[in-house]
Length: 404
Image (tube, rainbow, N blue to C red):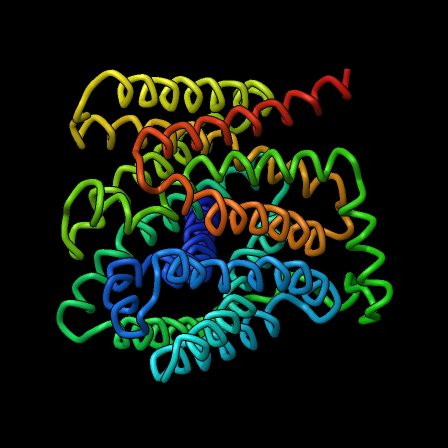
């Protein structure tokens, strides 16, 4: 009688342990992006940069991040998940040291690009590990647990970065990223399991890997779903990419108050992830996506109307509505991601990489091109966020019409 409960307890403990480790690996990306937001004005002043030039420190990171995410998954399909994660973390740690010691803006951009090339190991390969371990509702629950744990990182990253910047200067923020790399590399070496055994690995042949990636990228339903996911997450990337302009310029807060923007967004993500886990196996994925888009569209449309009619719109109202929007986005995302991976059950690492690449390139375009044009006005940012959600919803609806 006692064996079953003990087994269930051990399974739950293992589930939590894997979720915490995968979530920690995924935090490399938000810490790389969000931690140095409070340092934007200081870096601009030191290197005599315009706001547009400073914004390219994000683009220089995200574009290589996207391209390498296309490569990391296939490499993990051929060589295993564990060695790719460890090598990626080592390169990331070295690049963080380079950023901290950069003598010029050109060198900073260069090392930011190297950071981007290596930081995706946790995000791209972590999703493949989830699918290695579980199927169906169990995979959705594990991914939702990871999202809830991971969701704390973007909220605390700019807060930690702000305090480090105020105390020690902007270079020390990149030193903190180096410490993250060292810590995760050590923990992964000790505790990250290999979930992709040799008998399931694809041969390491660049031509075959490229053909696999192209086969996935040229699959009509996959690419439409990937664009839908990318545009949907851009509803939040619009705000996150404009964080320095919103917090320091439009809300007139300080370098240590970035949590005013990030906390409601992350709270929304965590709430949406929790709801997704609760709904797993209870309602269909299609109904969950429909509910998520309804929540996101309703909240983003309301904040747009309020910005046009209430001047100034209280910050707390903006925070609540942006948080609700984030919850809707997070209800949508796990279903889209799992559906894409299920289209290629024998090449999940490659599928995860292509999906990440499309999503990140979409985000890069949003942050590098759209955000600088919208960042001068809260109304324009709200309009951009709503437009992204509408386009994402439209693409999702197109895949449903093809099914019928």
